[in-house]
Image (tube, rainbow, N blue to C red):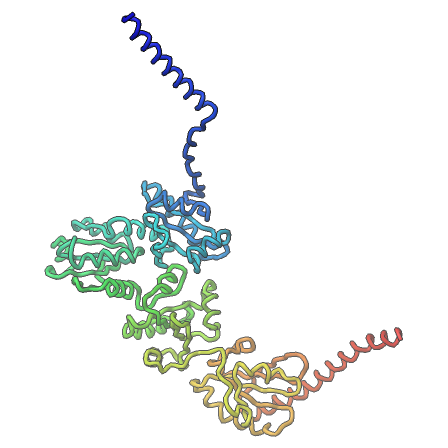
Length: 530
């Protein structure tokens, strides 16, 4: 009996275990549901290696990628389309390098709610998100408009911002990276002034940056061995030097490099426009001239001579009027072919324009124009001057843009207008003649003699010539303009006016007759209905 007891105990225990196991199996197969497996987030779609970002996957992209550069893309914008092509090329380059940095695109025309949530208001825009920080993206500089500048900027943000130059052969290879390069000569490559240099390099991704402490390179390029110096090279030659210290501000170094990397006079085109509009110098003076004209070299030389005096204060730009692709800038500044050569100043902060108050482009005139502008003495070019007090109380009426159409397109008055520029000697010589003409018709019932400063008032819709120009607006129902091309004497002006008065009477009579004939069928139809 004593031997059977353990056996029964073991048998009972075995049965109990089997029962528990069986019950567990039943629970798992029926009454109890195991915890669901965690689903993996859906893979974010890509187009040409660029993540297609939406409101539904944006946070996911931030979690998955430590470094995420986002292009806020407006598909109808030409600038956005151009950037998109470069953005795709940058993504391909980074992928081929095995980079951890990912690029994503948000179509703001489809993802308006996301753009509003992120407070993006201007397009195209590049924002760089680091470590999933949605609230504090790095706003990329405007110069990021090529694949190379985008990749360079990203690499400098996430790694070394300047290439280490160890010897002469490496320096020679470095100079081949661009027409303009920056090389820092430092005593210490880890501490002190070099830190400011590295910080500046991050913000100037469109220029190659190198750094060295090799004393033989100091000697070769005649840089003082006991100083820290940043040197701007152009085509392997020293262009400008800037001594730095631990006290030097990053902003000061950047301004030095940005100002001196550009030529004294920069030609406006597709390649330079980004640098021009992104310049730290916001005062821009523009020379509009035909590059193929015989006097162009002299004009350019004049402009360049003054540019050297105002470097850092005013950016000097040349616009070729013979280049059709510059049409938008001609339109913006209201410059026509007949106006060339012409000089304008604009401040990019307030976009107010100024026109040089001189007929000829000379060193003295350009210098005075710049000086007056900096001193606040230059006269802004507006769409219209204010209407002068007593503008119609003198023999010659003084018109401005806001009252021009109302006065000249008047079917009760024949209006003869002189378009002038106040600084023009040719115009000044004609003022007395025009005053005499005003007195001749001072009491005439249907004739008005007037003038308008075409340099200060926007009247390009009727004026295609250079000043001085003369146009007659007859007293007819149609808005007609008759240009005057005769001799500029009082007698010839008077004869022209008298001839135009008679022609205007004839045209007016014909207009009234045509109006009467058109009304007759309507009257007859009305009588028949009655």
